[in-house]
Length: 596
Ligand SMILES: Nc1ncnc2c1ncn2[C@@H]1O[C@H](COP(=O)(O)OP(=O)(O)OP(=O)(O)O)[C@@H](O)[C@H]1O
Ligand SMILES: [Mg+2]
Image (cartoon, rainbow, N blue to C red):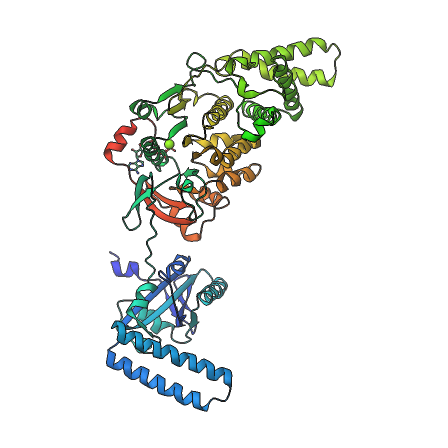
């Protein structure tokens, strides 16, 4: 026996109560709007329609001018009579104002020839239980109140109203009682279709199209010429599950940035930027294969300090920061390292620097790659100290533990970590790749990743050019809840603006940024980005993202359903649904690497 389509669609049960309707297992109530504010703005109802769990029905029925003028004349006559009989001065004044507003209305009508409609609006609220429905009713009523509207549940009329909301029923008498005459101009503004679009002036990127099909021209460095909509920096975070289109969106952005003459420094763990780098004459540096291809000395410092600080000879600030960074490096390399070993490491490193005449008084601007010690030297310091510790003390025990940690760096891992920096590039498009290491132990991969990040950051510090620092698969940096590493990334986010640098941080796992130990830094990383491109995510990830970024229920819901290329674009204080568009040629120019 086949079940008819109609009976499949129909609710299992339908029960009308005086002030609610039970449809299958849902509890519903319909609020009818009985009064509106005197003036409204464009897209007046847009916010209301974003509330979750409600449906809005609006109707407009034309009113013949003759009917309307009769209504108005009657209203005016009524008011006059009430005015004359009223003794309370305040109420009299209220009547006078209403009277005046009707007169203005008539004037406007005759002047603009606007047509008048009987405007009817119902808000249907649904919930899973009676209690939930009551709570929601209060919420929605308050919301309406704040918008200057008044909504009531008309008792014993719920059935008629439901029929009036549905297109399949004939008009019924409720429609003659609930409307408000509204001129067409005002009514047009009521409708919630507001198309917020982005058409930035200046050097922009054609990122895709918005909801209504309009193109999005996005200028990542807009803050340099114009402060608007809370767009204060050039930092962007791109989120989405695997294959949602993050890297593709990033490449669309990179391509425009290259065209606009900006410098690019990218960390590309999957090696998917290789074709693009070659196409645009960039420098593709393979660090996953070890020393012969390129070496970044973890002991090299980054000159990130204010110019004023530098003038004061504050090598102090730089060296302190360097020691912090080295500790972060050690935590990636050895996530379970004990605090005392880490402190000892910091001491040993300071000693080693001292042997190389580097201390708090050093002018780092005069030092180059060859002047820094390497892990061989750190290891030598440890060995030396151990020799001088003849007795079996606690200090010696800690030092022995440290020796065990450092030894592999100078032996089997020396191709990644031990040696002077050999990279020498002045390209405008620099890509660091560790593809070969993606299958290595996580700790080695993460330590190398972090070491590259530090160096890459150092390459973005030229204020004279706009630079993009792109980090794909950034969740690796948050692995093992490395607070020091998370803090480093947060610091980059905070300081990049000073150097005319914008970051593009890409991740599949917002969850890692919201983990208990690192959420303070995770929040800072997000708070210091003016832009987020949120592509499709799974439920858990959406919930975790909501702890880092404000998302309303409707947004949370739709993010779970996005398909490839679709995204919620948070652009300063504006947000909209967009489709990232890469043309066939663009996709080809991005090459074959990466993705699904
Ligand atoms: N907006 C788009 N238009 C057309 N094709 C797209 C778009 N976005 C993605 N694709 C296609 O999907 C593939 C996978 O996308 P992409 O590499 O950007 O995913 P991803 O989010 O970076 O995934 P992963 O997390 O695995 O790196 C791309 O190689 C491309 O072919
Ligand atoms: Mg990717």
